[in-house]
Image (tube, rainbow, N blue to C red; front, top):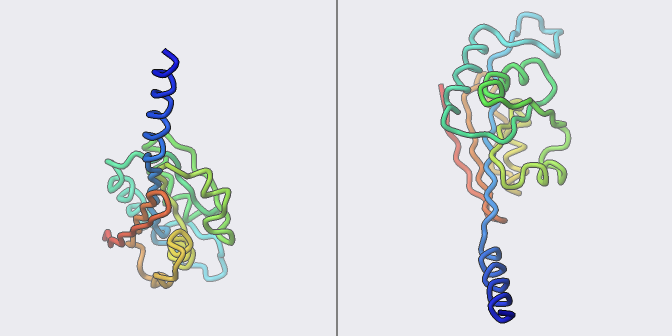
Length: 164
């Protein structure tokens, strides 16, 4: 009986050593913002931007997110909200000056996560996950990029889609 218990423990440990930790990040820039007041550093979305936010939610219909993150700006929150609401999640905030921090990595490990950012922070965030400078800032008129980064253990893969 003792040998059987030892054998089962060894088998369990062997299976766990081959287990893979899969983390998937979906990263988008906020939707179209209101540019009518050049002095407003925290504008809301335009009607077109609100429609895009709803479209993102429908794009993600078949993705089950564990968490939705946004910077603490009206335009990013409004972009994230339809998806978070549809999935019954509360939007969590991240600091755009501390992209892919150790804390963020630990909180999201093994999860599927939506991250909404800005034209400069979104590609920088992707680069931080990848550990390389693969992407440059998003053009100011581009609100359609979707970066999907998958981490399996320490290996990364990335896909860039344009969803108009």
